[in-house]
Structure formats: structure tokens, C-alpha cells
Image (cartoon, rainbow, N blue to C red):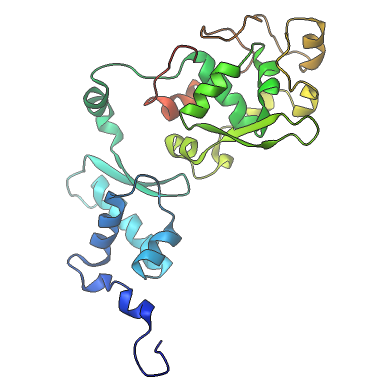
Length: 258
């Protein structure tokens, strides 16, 4: 497109001619991805490089295959994969132990059982209040939720229109750590948790050990331990989410109460 006086439009002047750069489009994509601190959507990459989306997507898949060594070449210590709604370069899973020793100095850094259980309930029943999560787990989860928020795994996404209680849901960082592009990829664990209809009116953090607790939780849910979740892992009825949240949280560190 040109301006009325015949001069090239500003977007044509500024648009990078990526195919004329050393390495062409593949190298241009690598250069952008190397400075990304979060997954970049294909549309954003295509816009930045002024290249059709189909060309970008095809090149991304070619690069991912090249890094894996699918063409007979040397597998790289990093990989390119789609996660969290975009594409990003990650260290290869085969070298996770080596990377872990370098980053953590040999220390294991994972969320506690209590935090994993709370994260699983939020992931499957979001948006959900802390009181509703407490009803499922049978303990006060206020401190655990604060830790998950601090880790960037969950965030307040709104308020209950009836009670004003804050509602929490998982974040894009959670999807990224899980390697998911959407919550639809969560394993089918939800049928094992009570419906939100069974948790109406439990937006406060009242003592869940009384008679009201038994009436509030879905029939058949075992809440055998009502101790406050102030730092110790406590038995909870939600299925253990190791397979769900273990990889998502292995680079986080618990700080006392979660």
C-alpha cells in the first residue's frame, strides 16, 4: 500500500523483510522466541514478523521437529512446544534432572500435598471461592490459596454476585506449567468432586467440623480431618492430584503454610 503522494506506507517501511535476513523466517522466529518470557501466540508472532499465520505455524512445527532430531540430526537440549496458548522454547525433559541441579542446587522444590489438593479443586471447579474449596477439602485453605496466588498459579477472577466472596481460577502460567493450551485438556477428574450446587452458602471460612459441614458436602464425601490447614498437610477428600499438578509445580517452593 502507498500513500497518495506515491510514498510507501509506514507499515511497509517498518515491516521486517524476514525472508531476506540471515536464516530467513526460521531464524527470525528463533530470535523472537529466545527473548520471550512466556508463550507467544501464533497470531502475535505472525503480526510481529509480517508473515502469514500458516507460514509461521508450519515453520514452528518444522523447528520443533528439528530440535527433537526427527530428521536424523542431533537432538537438542531444548525443545519448542505449544503450551499456555502460545509457543515457547523450553529445556528438554530428558535433561530435567541436570537443569534441576543447576537451578535449585540439588534442593527439591515442590508444593506440599495440601497445596496440590487445593490447586486441583480450584482447577476443576473454577471459578470457586475459598469457602467452597474449604468445604471440599475439609480444612481452612485461606493460607494455601494465598501461597498459590503468590506462585502465580491461581488468581482472583471475580466475585460471587450473591455473597461478594472472591472467586478464584487458574492462570495462564498454570496452563504453561501443565503444558496445556486450555482447561479442556485436564484429565477427567471432575466427576469425583462435589458439584458447586452442593456448596451453596459456604463462602465463609466457618468451622467446617460441625453439623453444617456434613450437610454442605456432597453425600459420600469423606472429610475425616477438620484440622485447620495452616501449614501441615491434612487428609482431604479430593483425589490426590500428583498426576494433575506435579509437573506444574515442581519449580515452586513452599513457604511454611503450603
